[in-house]
Length: 188
Image 1 (spheres, rainbow, N blue to C red):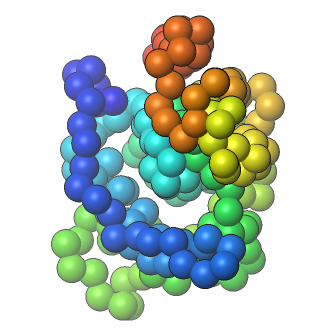
Image 2: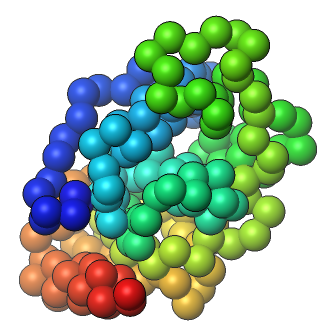
Image 3: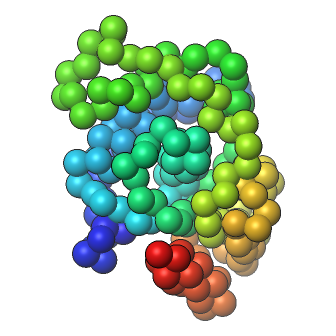
């Protein structure tokens, strides 16, 4: 959500699932595209992601948490039917993440030498407020609960709704989501 209250949707990102453990291929480029859009089109105070978008939003949360995006004023995340897969293990690695451009992310054409790796992003729980929705009939519901484990218990509100892999319209869940957003926006 932008400062003016508008909601903006970007173009599809260059990421895809690959391998038996559903790890992301090219996720660094996808996150680079998200960072570029946040910087150029922001400021944004909240990010909503559904499914793979929730996974990418969680990576952004980790970047904000570790101080890699000091200009970002992101106060909350709404994560709907996301999943913790192999990509989360990538964030906790001690190996540098090659290809994630944390210095020249505004350059339209970065060159190989401009890319540096981030330190491990998930060395601590994410403390940014998050609303996390799991669908009771979602075949990957347990993986959503795995995503919850990346967040500090006091900073996230978890709701299981009767739907499957979908954005909820459950009134109590929507009210809880709105309350979290309102609290986060009032935290000045």
